[in-house]
Image (cartoon, rainbow, N blue to C red; front, side, top):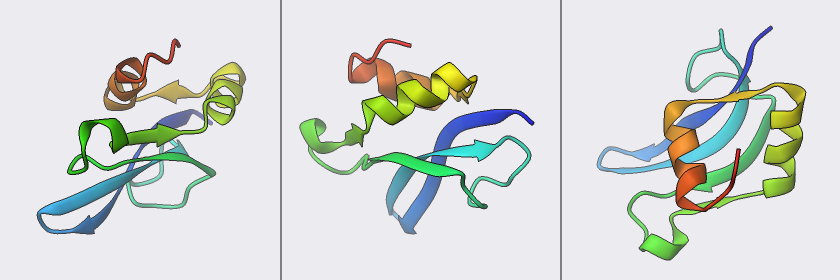
Length: 82
């Protein structure tokens, strides 16, 4: 089973927000999650857009979870080293 850290979409048309979640790679984007790690609000002010629990993220990365390209970019924006 391959586990990924990726975004799960919420919100309405034109006002999206996302949760940073851990999912089995075979599950659809908005399907069942294993754990929620944080949120991403692209519409918010720059300093409030991304928030996540770094300890949980580090734990999942140590277990072998692979972040998607978009999530990797969000982590880099917050200066979180992978």
